[in-house]
Length: 277
Ligand code: SF4
Image (cartoon, rainbow, N blue to C red; front, side, top):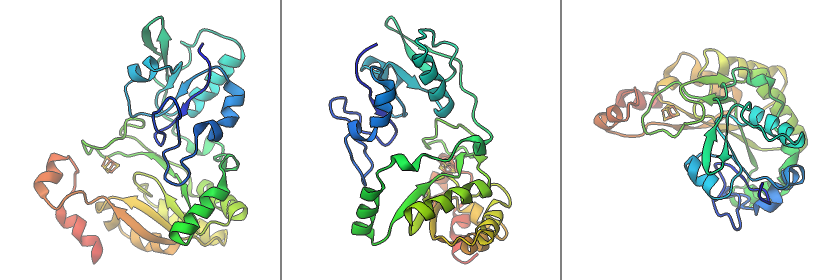
């Protein structure tokens, strides 16, 4: 195996000489932000993310590429490396070079029970720099939280190669548990729910609002959603009750011809209706 570790995600610049987090807030050299991994996995190059082809990653020095959801694959890979194994074929969701040939192992099954994952390791984030930067440029401090994975729609231009046409959600209770911890530890002012589609499961947003009320947690938040979903009965009311202030609505185009060409599966009329509902 070659020396060094490069830890890349979809928010990471691809420079192999001085990789940096591409997030506009931190933009830190990865040698700093991936220090904990470096300690544990020194000498291995690991690649996460999906902007380039497998061959490009492996051809430029990555020893492994994690395909699809990475948590379980990474756990098994770390275990195998620690045990000194050289047989990585049994690990699903992995690609590596054998000689000069890229080898892909069997596909990793998509996770259905997202509550089984531990809560994100927020303590590994340098929160001071996030807070200061948010306050300096926006006057408030916002954090990103994900509640779902995937999207069941089929818009043909959308970049969603990891999860495919599936949609799995954390329970409202699990999300509120994370929000409570974040509030207590970091005193955020605002949350951006970074899901492709927030609260698609019937009744999810209502239950989320109930759980927040039960836990006496008040938040302000922003989501992304499709126009047609905003027309669901009581959806907007439940969003407002739970603290939603802002919706990025995927209208995409004012031309029905373009929407149809995109396989968007909705109409201009539906995009206009949420204004007045
Ligand atoms: S609804 Fe949004 S996330 Fe889903 S496929 Fe279409 S553009 Fe992508």
